Image (tube, rainbow, N blue to C red; front, side):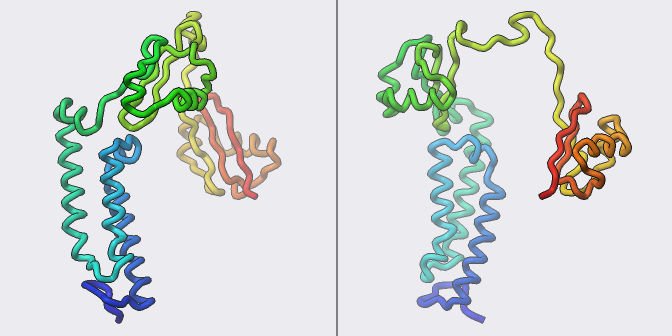
Length: 235
């Protein structure tokens, strides 16, 4: 059995493979237990923390002289510190704004706020690029642009350029629900058939229109609240 833990001057191939396997487990546990907010709303602090955690985790794999025991305490300390800050941020808005940052207005009522753009190193080209990503090609259409703490841009168009909604013309919009999966990789979910108010005979009749006579030939089939189905055949 090759030496894996502790300080190792020369790591054998088998020892290196086992260490890589252990690092993989640690990476999985780190990724599995880090708060989803950290991934979805990646602030500057979250980015630095994730980078440090990654560097600590792979350190024993890159250098045999670094023991696994050397990284446990820093990992646990950073995890604990992160959870404590997240908890305090939930209870205290001032602390949350300090650690997570504040939204910054770049365009206010159609007017460029140049000092905020300079402060965050955002030039016109970058601003226009972000607007194009949001399908806005004319800056004159924009009323507000806000730089969020996670680096994303929130954009609001001027009233004259906003798309018309049903409430604007006093129309009633039909409610929509999430479609139910009734077949997944050839497996039929009878309970979702019952929820959607149809039976197996109805389903097979509709599948026949797609030249399908067996649910095992279906990769995915969903049904919405209007009994409209989506079908994807197996290749």
